[in-house]
Length: 433
Image 1 (spheres, rainbow, N blue to C red):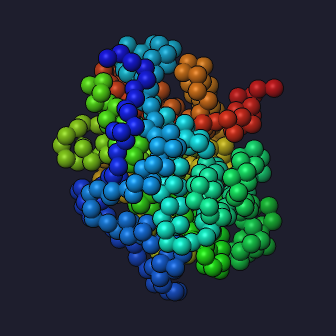
Image 2: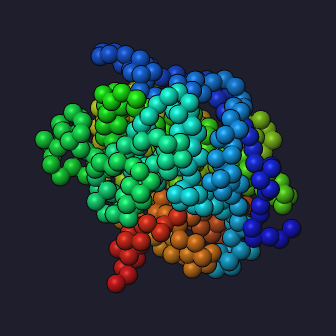
């Protein structure tokens, strides 16, 4: 079957999430309390959704999603198509390499983040909460949670990394149209924000700071609950709907990937597309490689250390064993700010430590990234997010490498979001007057 769009019917949309933890070659290192200070575990129990925390440590292979969440997925446009990149293949002169891409940009808010936002909003409403609180980097997660909150009649408070808040005016407007209350982070709404601003009034912010502000705000406002958009096990598990759909789509065309590429900051979209396939690799059912594409602004898997560290600057979280650059590190702003996080998800970090996941980092100037995005736009027609452009860059580079070596390979790229609210970045990076 030589189709450039592969679809599965709605009634074949998976109704369970895949939990890779029982299939890992060795146990996932558990969270730890720091040597001093109050209990971070107790703090999370007070500030995060109980059902999500239960899923965080679950040893069940499959977690059945409530019917209401399955219906929300359908309303949000799932299942999403898988495309064969035939025009991109021709543009690159590929004869032996086949390129595919999964379309997570087709969600209502334009990114994969909706997959866990809907689940977390549903569980929060069931637990009687009135306000969802979160952080956001590039803005996709904040938008997704504001959208999910609106569907569940909940309020939403978003702490947005200041360097991105300042230039993504239209995405900020979209969050507010959904009903979200948005603060530039660091802000004067929290003690940690005020402390950082006192030292540097022009601090560009970071995801680690925004997480700290969100957690502090949640602890001080009754009825609030904190929702995290990446890194934690339950977030990656909710995102496995991506890979589970994609497996069915490859089966329809009797093909399978040899390499799966995704961009990676904390790990949610990369984990979502890759973990169901990694599970098959671990069980001996598939031979496939996995490549995380990162920025040299935050190359946690490339240059980080595999050790215990906090997930936020304010040290509200337990210590997690991750590839980390250090939770206090200063990272230069980039247009793909969703990738600018100091550490990678514990699950992805363990898989990297075991050699199952590989990683590459691209220069901070992002010239090669946006050039890949332009090639993708001019051949396939889709305007993709700066973050997704890292996956396309790595996919193109590997395809040309395989082609030159005379290897027949299949590459799958995950398109985590669209770029319609990132046009200012395209204009700047591509020198468009």
